[in-house]
Every structure is written in structure tokens, then in C-alpha cells.
Image (cartoon, rainbow, N blue to C red; front, side, top):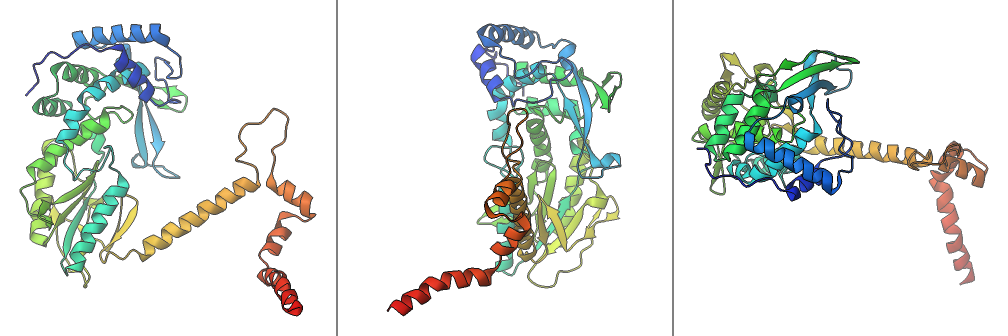
Length: 408
């Protein structure tokens, strides 16, 4: 139900705090308002007056509702549309206003989010999500129990959010009516142009989806999906220390967890149904099941929308490779190799002087390689070979010991 309590006006301290929290160096959007501009007390005061006019009327001007959509590749050598992520370049003034609203309603939204959600929350992240999943697998394998898991892949989840449904959810959790009015207006009347290279298309209306690049989007998406899994909380899952749960989530990256295949089938069907009710669609081809056990995994047949879900022995979740035996050896080797590559790259940058930063015009870059060559008279390759000659260094270190023995 919508809160009928009259919200207090926006004050200059809120605008100044939101301005400090905004990241610098971001694209200014169509209005070309740069975050790095020093507003001063006069500018803050004027912005506060404008924001209060918008806040009390519930309507935003046409310009702040316009944005530019660009695509960023998710991986190298991206070709098809699915390999790109769409980012909305919004006006920094609009971001600032929405940041003020976010600080006002963040506590109410955070209160409604369950502990199973690790995405876009303070003191939560991928590390906590991975740690939680690993701990659960260790506990069950240690008790000779099996875990039946389903790793769900949603197709363009952020782009399929229904605006009307999202506003109704905000009303249910008691967000102030003035805040909801601004959010609804910013989504219902938004327009965007698409930039491809140097070309920009005409403005067009956006009818669904949350903007990737908006400060509100992570919180709106979390509360949107929260109501899906509230409907499925009655289905059987796992039990750890008396706490019952059946999923772990990081934004839209979801894994369903049960103790047997029958419960997993019922849970997957329920999640698919309630997801479809709010516009989200599961990508059956990229969704995988897994039986996590210390013994030989049993073959399972889980179906969604009449299609069988592939059973995998390994799956990459939140950047970590999860396998059906919870063996971490391969993951540890991968992490060690990544650290070695990073260390070697850092040493190369140090030797070639790439970490020096800015330097006066005309002065050459100072490189350790040049200093080593000047001091030793050898090039870097010869110095490296000599430094790795362990027999030579052992003989050098043993000479003082031999001299000491002769003296005795």
C-alpha cells in the first residue's frame, strides 16, 4: 500500500551528499552536464529548488527523460547481439535526482530483500555468494547427502521488467507516493536514441526494462525478482542449522537447491511460472542441472516448458567453476596461474617504466631496463639468465662459509 505520509522537501544537504557520491569521469548524456563541474553553494541551491519543483509536481521536463543507448561487448571478439550489453547514458542531473530518491527509500527496499540475494547490496558480493555455496556443498557432502542444483539463466532479465508491475511492487512495500510518482514518470515517459559508431538514431519510447546505468536499477531489479521467490519459498529446499532455503541469487544469476530430483522439478516449474507472470523468461538452453555428491552422480531428467535440462558435471557460477564433487583443485590451479600472469605483467610494466605516470613533455620515459643495462653493461636478457643461475649464487654464498672454516 502506498504511504500517504507527506514527504519532507529535498534539502541542499541531500543534493550535496548525492553529488559527492556520484562517480566522476562518467559520460554526461545528451544534456552535457559534467559531474566534475564545481557548482558551489549557489549551484546547489538552484538545483535543490529545481528538484523540489519536480518532486512536488511529480513531472520531469522532457530533456532529463532522454538518454542514449550504447553497446559494450561482454567478451572479446563479440559479433552477435547477445554478446553485447546495452548501457543507458542518462543525464547527470537526472542521475542526481534519482540518487537523492534512492537515499530516501534505500532502507525500505533493503528491508524487503531476503538473505539469499547477494547482488547489488552493501556488504554482499560475489565472494560472499561463492563462499555460501561452497559452505553448503561441503556441509552436505560431509554428511553423505546429495544436493540437486539448477543453475538458471534468464534471457535479457534487466530488459524484460514490466514498468507497471514494478510500480505496483513499490506500492506494496510502502514507498512514499511522491518517490513512486517520480520513478513512474521517469520510466513511463522516457525516450532513448541508439548510438552506433558516430551515428545516432531518432528518439523512441522505451516500454519495458530497467536502465542499465541508472542508480535505481539494481535496487528496482532486486525488489522485482524478490516477489518471484517469495511465491516459491514454500517449496522444499535445503536445511542448514534449522534455516530452510531453496535458492541463492546474485541479481539474475540464480541457482535452485533441493535434496532430491522431485523437489527440484516442482521448484523449477514454480520459478518458471512466476517468472513468466512478471515478464521474465528462462533460457532453457543455457540452464543446467547438477547433482553434487561425493559418490557417482545420478542421472536426472528435469524439464521446463517441456524441454529437458542438460545435466552438467561442471558449471561456472559467479566466476568460479563449480563441479559435482566440489573438488577445488582445478579452481586453485586456475587462480594461481592468474596470479602468476598478473605478477609477470606487473614486473614487465615496472621494468618498462609504464607505472611512472605523467611526465614533462619531451622527457623520455625512465625505464629500469635502461638503468640495469647502464649499471651492469649487459642487456636485460643476460642479467635475467645470470640472476637465475642458482649454482653460481650457491657457490658465492658458500665461499664465506669455507673461509670461516679455514680460520677455525
